[in-house]
Image (cartoon, rainbow, N blue to C red; front, side, top):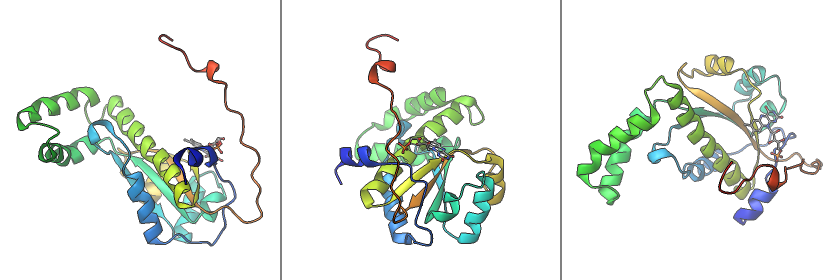
Length: 209
Ligand SMILES: Cc1cc2nc3c(=O)[nH]c(=O)nc-3n(C[C@H](O)[C@H](O)[C@H](O)COP(=O)(O)O)c2cc1C
């Protein structure tokens, strides 16, 4: 599917074909394409918990305001923004940049200093924003990749973050910007027309706010 067509046709699907599975290979391909997302200094501060087991989806549904699509979708993805992604991925990122010729070895310490200044300490608000921003770009890429691969999605922030963390063993310091339901549109369902989008002049300014 053409990229622009995919963007135009992506919708948040409320009615999934219940019981239709996505294979591990299909999910792997989806996640691999999404993983090509851009990120601050290529630090990739995201993690994903894939929930396919019907019993586990039931548990997640209870954390997610009892929204039926959590159980009906083929898979639920818990998108996790990791404030510790800087510490976790910095070495690999620098190594790759050096090896590929993006960066001279003598720039190593300057680059690390710049990253620490830009994204603050592990427990800072700055760091949470850094992680949530990048994980959300990953999430958007994933929804578009899903469209291109023939699946539909639904992003969700209607959930109790503490409940999701408790039930799925996610450490307290992580942030969960959204869950994404992935699957197939239930046969026989006609979507309502896409809801309004603001006119450009309501949100675009040139040169100055
Ligand atoms: C971060 C985020 C969280 C959302 N959370 C929910 C949700 O919990 N439940 C729901 O029914 N829709 C949720 N939505 C879907 C939006 O309502 C939907 O994207 C919007 O109405 C535009 O529709 P469209 O995606 O079909 O263009 C969410 C969307 C986003 C981006």
